[in-house]
Length: 451
Image (cartoon, rainbow, N blue to C red; front, side, top):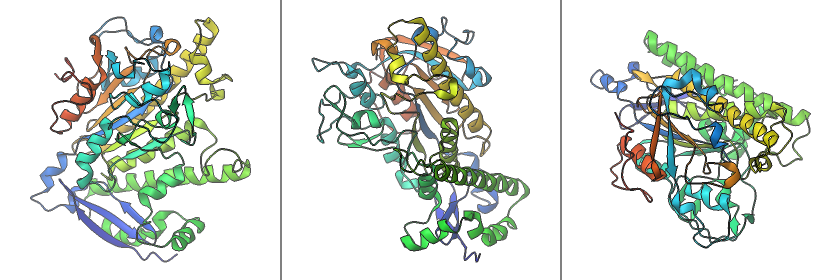
């Protein structure tokens, strides 16, 4: 097929961002030293700081999660054990609380208030209608700050469609449990859940071509690389050896994700899933779905298309059945285990599985070069849930992990009891270079985090 491709540069805050352009394709490339003026090449190692949030619904079994000792010699608990292979990349932070998730006389809707408070530190208005009100989330504070330097201000991803409407918790709109990203107190940002849609959002040149042309490209069933291969080859001749290797790895990563999305699309057709409440092009396999979405996120971060992204393993109140673990029960149903040992064991198995997915995510981020370091080194990754002990809807001791960002890992930091979660969020925003003195209900930066 005719390529009709071109090369385009745009100026960023640190480097020139390069795109390979084709019919219905706009492929951003990672920063490469060979494409920079000699005077600017040294800035390549000064890579921008980024922020991602990896969210799990329904809390955890805290007795099998929280380490018994602090510092670097803590023993890995059953839920944390899958993270052993990346122990030096993260810190467990216990004792963080969201006081604003408290009822304050409102109905006892633990999920409906805790989820919107997770990244905002704000008390959500009790409503089942469209008059939702909460606060701006930390990710969106960062998105607003870096928006001028990136193609996308932020990228919201998830696994379960945010399609539920009405009331999902007592007197609380489903909007509150569908997302953790809030652009403003009245504007919640829905998560994209179909890998094909995300791929097109990142790499399709939708603003420059009409819908008919884009659909012709998609129907051709070719790789987007086919539409830019001439220009890619021309660019490759200008690159040094290291940058050629980097570009080769990047293009192969794009192609790998593309193949997996195509496979998911075909499976959807073969299994007649299109008529179910499942978006088109969503893999039938839960774990493959998770990994494709996170790979897409990493491609967006690697190319500086965005510096801010949230990812939800499930909506809050998710009742997903983890049949791949041999568990037919719904997740939310198990979270209310009533101290029944069999239910607790199943919940812990789910909690540990979520940690395994998170460990794989950190491991892959740590393998991606980014200037003189890695993508993980330059990304603050917050992993957590809006509820601590699942059975009690507790939000006064949250299961929080902070990874990456160039911070020292292999630590259990026990914050003073009821320390605001917003202290951690404030610290991360400040470490990203955002000039803030407070955020949400913070009382100051989190003690013991830096150093």
